[in-house]
Image 1 (cartoon, rainbow, N blue to C red):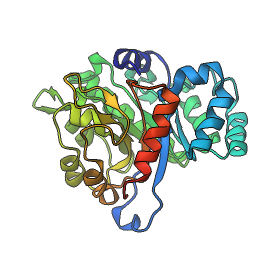
Image 2 (spheres, one colour; image 1 turned 120 degrees about the horizontal axis):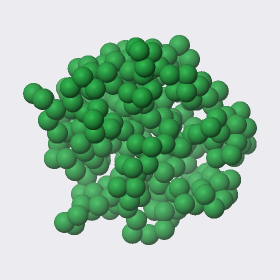
Image 3 (cartoon, one colour; image 1 turned 60 degrees about the vertical axis):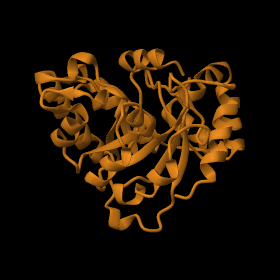
Length: 290
C-alpha cells in the first residue's frame, strides 16, 4: 500500500484493531496465530469482498485483521452477519484497527461514536481493538497527554467488553517529543493493564531502532507484530516476509516473553499483485520458528 495513502486514510476513517496483554509466564506452549491485515488487499476487497476472503482462507490463513469499519457495517454486512460469513468461510477476526483520536475524547469521556464502534468489535468476537494512528498535533504537549488519557479510558471500556485496547506504531513514534521518544511517552503514559502495543517491526527498523531492545525492556507489554520485510534498496520499501533485510527469526525468539501471540502479515508496497504477495508472505512466515 502507498505509505502516504495509508497514513492519510488512518487519519480520516474510523478503523478497528485489537491487542491483548498476557503475562509471559502464561505464554509457554501457547498457540501462535498468523493473520493478514486486510489493508494489504483493499482493492481486491472492493471488487469482490467474499471472493477475496475465501481466497485468503485457501492460502492457509485462518485469521484476518480488519480495517475501515464505518456506519456500523463491515464491508456491507452487520457485525453479526460478517462474523457468520467469516465462520462459514473458516476465518475469524480477532483484531481490527479502530482509530482513537482526541476528537473521540470529550470532557474526559469517550464519545458515543467510538464506544458504539467498540461495541460492534465485541459483537464480532474480537479480542483486540487497536488504534493505528496519532495525528500530528497529538504528538506533543497537552494534546499528547489528552490522547494518552483517552487510550487509558479506551482500555477500560474495552476491558469491560472482554477485549484489550492497543496502539499500532509507524516510524514517527521513534522521534523525540520533548525530552524522550514519543513511543516511550506512550509506554510511560498508559496503564500496562489497559493498553497493549502492536509492534510494527518494519516501521521500528525503518526508524533506526532494534525491536528486540523494546521487547526486552517491556516484557508482557506487547500483543502482536505486524510482519513485513524491508527491501535492500535505497527506498527500503516494504516487501514480503523473507525477501528483505529483517531478521525475523531473531526477533521472534523474544516474542513469548514480550507477550506476543499474533503475527500479522501486511504489505504497503507491491512488487507483485497484492493477493500473490500475501500468499508468498504466508508461506515464508510459516517456515520460521515461533
